[in-house]
Image (cartoon, rainbow, N blue to C red; front, side, top):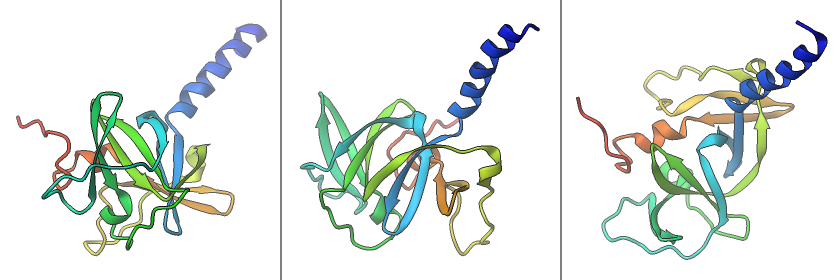
Length: 168
């Protein structure tokens, strides 16, 4: 392989490996979370939401996003992190999960980061005390610890009821 060929293939390989490890980081209370950037469609400010009667408490309601009715989930309520206070930093992250568009309310978006395999740790074992089914692992960036969420698994869960389950 010539030096020029190596120079042209190396960035492509690095780009492909970084794509699967890029996370959008967001805050809920004092904790920082991360999710796969490829699931994010857009980020919007918190706006008026139409409430739906008899919806679970964590489903704030729906919004009309360019003709698409989008359910909005408040992650603080879903994760039982206390009452959510909405201010100028509160945002809605619009996701595309399993072909379904939905939004999640978070306290704020931090940035997009790439994590190398050496910066990711497996989910700690808590036994049956804490449900870690939706946690992919923990990420470390300098002195920050990120809780890495498997957003597709969370939004597809039966308790969310937002995405139809395929039964074989």
